[in-house]
Image: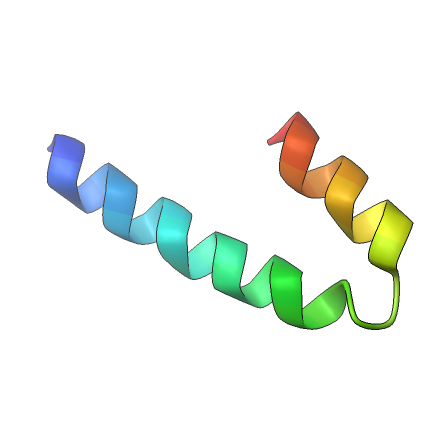
Length: 34
């Protein structure tokens, strides 16, 4: 279960880091909040 959670988290981080190119500060805030 822990491994699946980590995998999902990594995928989310990848997506947010890609989006943060457009919203650098907002993207970082969202990543921090999640």
